[in-house]
Image (cartoon, rainbow, N blue to C red; front, side, top):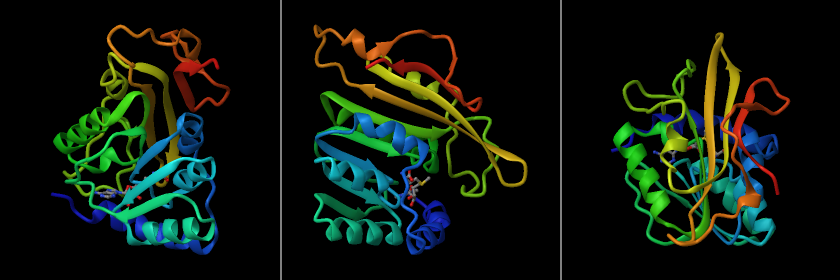
Length: 232
Ligand SMILES: C[S@@+](CC[C@H](N)C(=O)[O-])C[C@H]1O[C@@H](n2cnc3c(N)ncnc32)[C@H](O)[C@@H]1O
């Protein structure tokens, strides 16, 4: 069962961002965009900035979120540009994915679910990406001390490398850590993984797409570390 706390936390923020016309992609959506193609499922789409941009680039998008303000905004913008975005208000605390997609994105969602449910949805995501397709997942990890958006006892901070480890056997294209200062001298620490499902047991991963150094590689910004990076 899901509580409304996390959705309510974002509702006011979405309303004021929509009023101000603030629809820029966040850093995680920017990271995700080059990997998004075909039929796309955007879980916890928020204002739908990634969904809208993907649809502008020719993707067919299903965008789901529990926030009425978010979904109303996505609908309005998609309709104005006649984009292929099917957006729906959806409680993702119990949702089961019913179809297969080329790309599934869950940016900033899974930590709002209790551990068992977060891992169940992650498994559902992995199961519903077609072979050769891509998953983009971003979560808050241990070390995060900004907890205002969580209902006590009803969230899950992943272990530092857990997300990447849960994609063992996949072709991990990106694995990044981002750290941001937050109000009250707290911090948010994120892990982001982009992973492609291998086409089959005998298929070769495309080595040109991955640089497989395991050493942390600062990318210029001291608050960002990517353990794998795209070379294409
Ligand atoms: C941190 S925001 C991320 C939004 C968007 N993916 C982005 O990158 O800007 C988290 C989103 O998850 C949604 N959310 C949180 N818990 C949810 C739940 N149980 N069911 C549906 N949506 C939920 C919130 O409404 C919010 O839009």
